[in-house]
Image 1 (tube, rainbow, N blue to C red):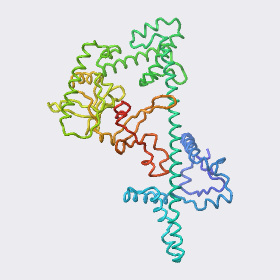
Image 2: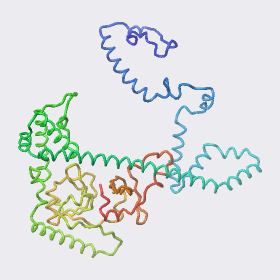
Image 3: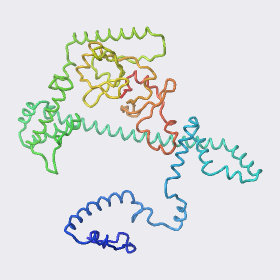
Image 4: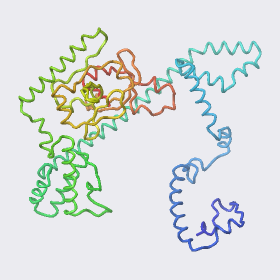
Length: 468
């Protein structure tokens, strides 16, 4: 209650408290003291966590709690604000705009010359001494460049090492995920496979001989939908317990039936069918109809190719057209051409076919939003030759976000990395990947120099690059 009545001394006996009319009014007893105490307990407990996290080094037991006289002398010149550093970055920004091709070592020299007031110091020297220092600086240029190259190589090695460590962590996570999915799949097979209808759920539960076996079967079904199928846990329907209390068979059954109904509703929305089996029935269509659809698709591709090859010759890269399938899911991340009706007039629009959750859409060139389509609509357009994968211009990749397939040399595992294409250098493209943003403070120029150059078009043609 010391905080409530004003007797607490937060900074020890040296705490200065000046009592006046305001303090007396604030700390005088009233009927709200108990509520005030509770509010202060909540505020102080949260404040304690933040203070321990942010100021731990300066609290008792921290690295800065036992300062020697030598430490005080050493830190005497440490600035109390970051104003000086902000000025340095302001100079860096201005130099980069005025001299975009300047190297890091040249920019560093300009900033140090300004900050250290080297010009004023040289002006105070005698002519002979000034000449001596300038000649010495000229002779040391090669040594400084060698040191700069060594420094850059060291940074690159640290970055590559960190990237390898992150890749190993990602690979281990993938292995654990695969092992877990494999385990859940085996458990699912032991309870009659996936229960995709409420009728099947009732039938399989009827085969269980005990309450315990029913609980285990329901938990397996729910875990599989949550982990493998990545269903949304709306209303905690995929949870097995609440407040440390496990759900009963009745509650789990009700939740599972709700999840099954929602899954079937999504299947109907995406595929135009209500059941899982019918939702993918287009994959089991008879061979004659598939051959006819392929023939129409091939004819549309040939007509488009003949039209484009009649244009003046220019450098192009032929992207691999996926003519072997009328499944739009096979060309996700590819550059396509789509025939749409605009104000009653048919018009071709080019863009990228993308997947958003369980749905599919096309981000048309010149539009920021994604226009959503269901799989059945896109498949019908492919069968009619109104949705085609087309050639990719080399310059189109610049500025685009991509997913790039990397192969681990030791294990052969595949890992998809997200990145952004920032520039083109001949046949290669400069790509900055999402995990390349650490340690940017070490060198402003590293973000560009350390970017990876790859032949994206070759990988795109091989299906190892997706546009997103």
